[in-house]
Image 1 (cartoon, rainbow, N blue to C red):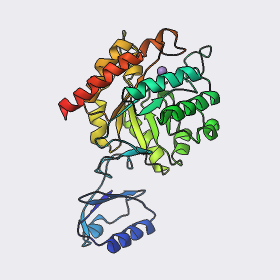
Image 2 (tube, rainbow, N blue to C red):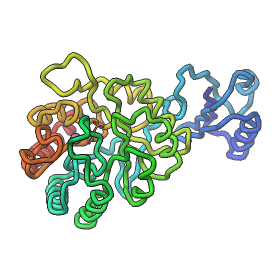
Image 3 (cartoon, helix red, strand yellow):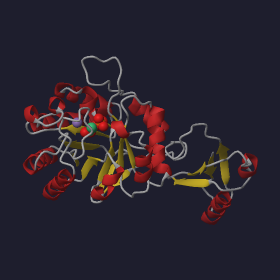
Image 4 (cartoon, rainbow, N blue to C red):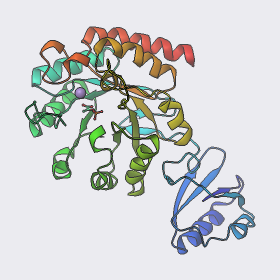
Length: 333
Ligand code: PEP
Ligand code: MN
């Protein structure tokens, strides 16, 4: 249920109303926008007397929200959420380029790539230390050492880092990581989501390989319901009938997620297509349809990458793409 407060309501009366709603055992999610304040009521609202609330002089309107996702719902929070990573902002018109290798392989590799992508306009560095691989015989990532190397690259460039957490037991190692990624394969690892919900740092939540948008939003709801409001959604392609591409990039997910939710939505064209030459056109399309950012795999030697070389751009290709993304954003703005 949402309660829209009149713009001239006094803060005292608003606080009184919130206290009263909480005394009925409800969670109250307050979203104070420029023009109106919206209270999102969470919990069993079946016993709440809508007419009584609507009759209060500070209340503009009361509506039931039929969707099962509440905290992520735009109806609860009409304005775009802007996620902050230090001084960097994501969402609400703030577009970011996140770039880096699939996996951290060595200090030279990650520092060289970090410097290159920064020079081309990336504002966050990606790189996997814990890698979810289909085969147990493939490179599994440098794990703790990989995280340390990411910190070295951050030190060298000033770029905040984004890296994937696969298992809750590794959480202490991620204390000094700027943005924690939940990968596609873990999108419905509810214990992980609940725990990440207790942190005070941004979570990049990727859509599962075969998950619907509603399921993605419900996973984000797990994080937010546990108290962490800094969630970034990521469309990274889903399994369909595509034979020549790794996945199918569901670009319509971007405007639809923006309609349903206030959270920033970014696109990963690398895992969506699996082919480096497909990454630029899909990046431009994502920028054109309103994505709040792109996460792109870049490697200084794609032919010898330990993971996902075929979909990795060279630093030069990334540089050319970054300029075009900028032009597309200007053209559609
Ligand atoms: C990744 O970003 O390195 C990754 C494994 O992505 P996804 O979870 O989308 O497959
Ligand atoms: Mn990868």
